[in-house]
Amino acid sequence: MSNPDPISVRQTFADIAHRYDLANHFLSGGIDFLWRKRLVGLSRKGSCSDILDLATGSGDVAMALRKNLPANASITGIDFCEPMLEFARRKRDRLKEGAKTMRFLVGDCLKLAFREESFDLVTIAFGLRNLSDRKKGLSEMLRVLKPGGRLIILEFSQPFFWFRPIYYAYLKGILPWMARLVTGDRKAYLYLGSSISNFPNRSDLAKELMEAGFERIFSIPMTFSIVAIHLGEKPTTHCQFAP
Image 1 (cartoon, one colour):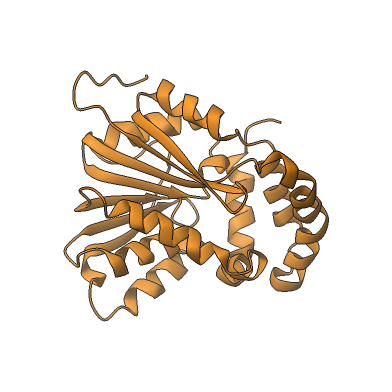
Image 2: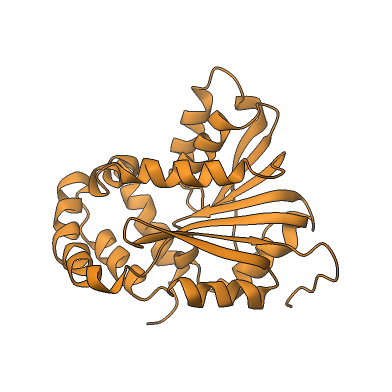
């Protein structure tokens, strides 16, 4: 499979932005709330005063972080789809406190407009597989992290072997039609199925993180391993950045 085309991916998300949250909650049976809760719990186990949430979309992860981290923690959400960011900003503006320490910006994960060592935590949920150049994206995440800073990835993965026939029957046969009922767009969720089936398993993604320069890498499979959280840290010394 060729790498995702950024223009097509951006348009896909723009088309479903108005129903994106509803579709996620409905099609996952509400389990997506538990996945994000696990990510937030892990984020609290280290320094998190300056946070960058990549592929933030409608801001669900950023908002979950905001509600569970100290109010003075600075949270920046980046996405390349402006219609999605509009929904993220609406959620932020409804906050009773903490809104001033949140910002949502249009940006490119492959060319982040931040100085080196700007953040002590970078998160990305269900966006890594959409990058047209995963190696370059991981390199940028490493670059903007402070030494000892952490990367937390929440992403679809390859399910346990025994569960694969059931999962892919749902993902490719049933989910697109259910998605059409919710969003009116079946094509977007056909892309979802193909992007998931071609994404690396936990072991292979761990190797990519190691090659990018991260250390202390480990992963946590969830829900029969249909999703996984991957964690990595930026070394405190002798960091090398890929060109």
